[in-house]
Amino acid sequence: MARHDTPGPGDPVILIGLGRFGSAVATSLERLGHEVLAIDENADLVRHRAQELTHVVEADGTDEEALRQLGAGDFSRGVVAIGDDIEASVLAVLTLVELGVKEVWAKAITRKHGRILERVGAQHVIYPESAMGERVAHMVTGKMIDFIEFDDGFAIARTRAPKEAFDLTLGDSRLRTKYGVTVVGVKRPGLDFTYARPETLIHDRDELIVSGPTDKVERFSAMAAQRRWQ
Image (cartoon, rainbow, N blue to C red):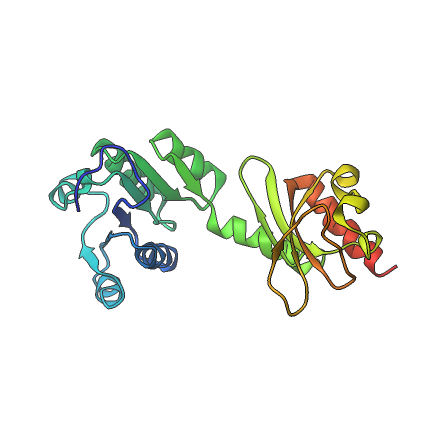
């Protein structure tokens, strides 16, 4: 695994923590063609994950000398997937940063935990439980079929087409002008998603992929669900 001074899309990744989240990230990275050096101090986890991953090592992810010997400083990207031990996750991030890893992603379990990770050098903090909880909550209400929110107050949702748009083109329905959201795709039963165009005709069973400020996406989805059954 060669050193890359500037992070690139195909760089190898060092990952610390092989719980469910870390294992899922490592597996996905390998599937996407990245080399991954996965590290955990739990011998049982290492033995189990060694059957699925190419490079797995039993080591203390907070031990600077151990990581140095493993060549952690040769990686430009790292992931700290430790969530249940805040002290260990903070120390692991700090160690990677001090060894010269340029971009570090870290899992946090609370906002306070995340702020600490940012202060010690993590450029990207992930809140997987919080994000999934909010996503499920939006779906449980019945207003959305799927929902993803980004850190900057921007969201994408899969929702049902509102009744007022039936049998109109997107251009004629003027949904963007009325509600401040952009329809980027349309899904019709039995057909693949298609990119939305002004001339796209909306039918009563269509689903829409909409994007925009989170509050506007939420209001649009709630409106679409309510008016659909009026």
